[in-house]
Length: 125
Image (cartoon, rainbow, N blue to C red; front, side, top):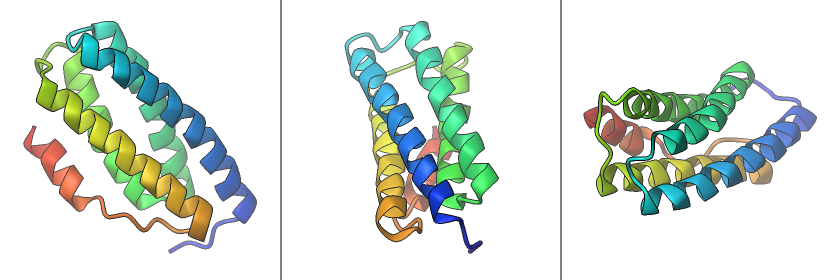
């Protein structure tokens, strides 16, 4: 793994935490209104930002998971994939896993939580 500047990691953790809070509040609204296109757009933007920042920093697990999440959100935004309670559940699981990875970074300066299981689920959708 690339050795990262601790201050860059700290900045990423703070920014990602803010985006994750925004995603969480929007997901809670999505549970009540699972077909609301505006909510998919509102989730897509912070996921896209997290993906870009994690790719830039070489945070491979966060980048891979957020990329697959972004792909699903894009299908939902374009109406190419209908929403469902199961879809909303996987969105919540992905958000929570990214939050775990960000917590790993804050604690140990490394991504520790696994992502392959969730990436596989997102790819099946």
